[in-house]
Length: 151
Image (tube, one colour):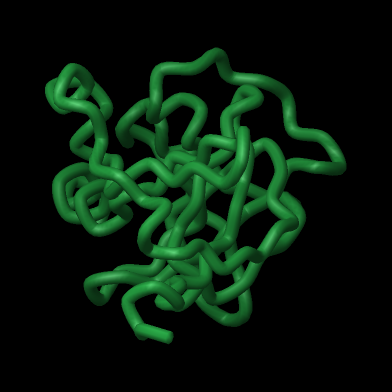
């Protein structure tokens, strides 16, 4: 059996507005419930503020707002996914997150050309598992290009 056929990457899956997204599990430090977010004046609209998590203060990014979706109230399913990538630690606020999955590389396709000018630059690829479609985020693109104002 070839390594190419069996190569998989682990992802943490989360949902925003009934859409499933995935981020590489190796950049996830922890997932936690939303407790206290301290607002910070004059930040970008999608920056909810900062949170104190495991001894450090980190920016909390509302991915619903970041992706142009309607902002909703937090509930018991809302999660803060703390990630570390490119020397930055941030919290991503998502509707729900509770699934860890290994995605075979052969099920991942590049984003369609038609969306590359919209939100496509934040997509690393699109995985299809049976009838399930998972949008895989390019977290580095999201952090490098959008949070330089915050850090």
